[in-house]
Length: 282
Image 1 (spheres, rainbow, N blue to C red):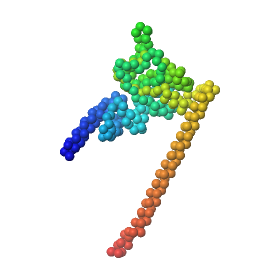
Image 2: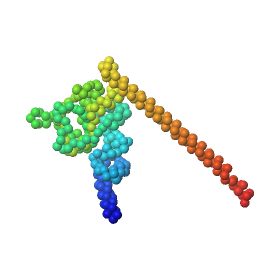
Image 3: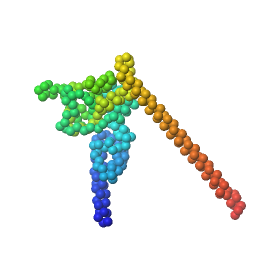
Image 4: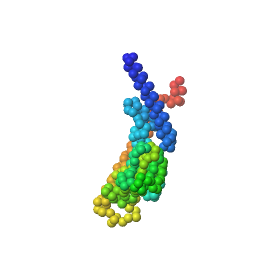
């Protein structure tokens, strides 16, 4: 029994030390991302649960363990402003931008890695949240031409991929990177794959066809538009039905509560003498 108590105490101390270490890492992570400090309480609550389940927690992948609502909030907080910098997205509805945010994935790049080489297919766009990236063209002799630096709030590949997606082109027609893209420091970013971007553009196809005639699209593309519209309509109808049922349920509970209160009041009146009759009896 003494051995078991000792092991239990050691486990608790280890969890407390690890929780304290992660707390410091979370503070640094929030500061580096420019996120409000009140999120720490939510994050640490989840972290504590994971530690109690003997699961290790990596702060770099913290979004993967957070509830969906909090993960979405953080993605929007970090990327909505950057998305609005992209020329093609500046006139788009916030609903579309939020849909893009939901498909973003976290990615880290080491200092000595390469994000894109000149001529690589642009199969994703990146939005930098920390670190510095250098982009440049090469002259064939190892020299760099037109060097530019990207930092927090900057992006790469968004213009080219959005142009590709707005034409509803095939993956065989993906654009290529015209520049080398390499981290100067360790880089933290969000990425949006071409596949996920295509899903978003199909779902919100009317945003990308405002100035185009439908005859410009082939039958298979029009069928995709129709299927996406039908799916959206069905989902809205189901949600409306759920909202109606939820409202009726709340109303029923409210009505039942009022009815219960009336029953209780009646029972109390029937069982308890009035103050006047009580005085008479005395």
